Image (tube, rainbow, N blue to C red):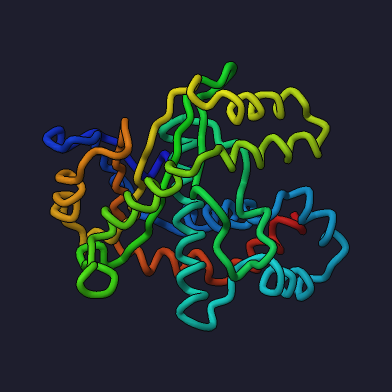
Length: 273
């Protein structure tokens, strides 16, 4: 559904990296939010796992399971940061799959041990559709209502563009393909050796694949300015090819809050339908 609400267009060809906007072509409405709530829930648990655990549960038991085991708490600032980060990763994944038309091999959030913590490693990894795998896409995702403000402690305050770039560059400088190795082990445990073999080859022969790097920024429309990317443009090249995608959303905080609001009832509807 997300592809019906947003347009994906290239812009600002004067930067040293590819630059794309994702902008709203339709106001976010109740139908969008209900669909997004479902996508959020399914990012944390498969429908099979949810029905296995909850098919004989009461509505109150289903709602309690969601708050106790599935979604991050909303008690303090750290909890809200995790919620916002998870929300951004989920929305970015929907854009990657439905607009960029790439294959995402795993729902990372389903493998959280602690629902109130962020997940390990690269925010998102995707591949070209179909076989063989030739292109690997690595993503760093940041969601900010106040993207126009620098962050960090003096004297090292930076725009979020620099923070995201440095985080992805750090991941890229790791001496091995940790996420591909995890995926190989995951598919072996599923007895899916055909899929495991694909990721084994990435671990053993990483230089045989085209590596692409992308910074995803989900930002509030009223606080966004392109100037946050001027410093990124002037950085010495570390990630190539580099693409920047900016998802501009009006009333971003309101939409984030409304996604979580009464999300427990959305699962009740999914289980009981």
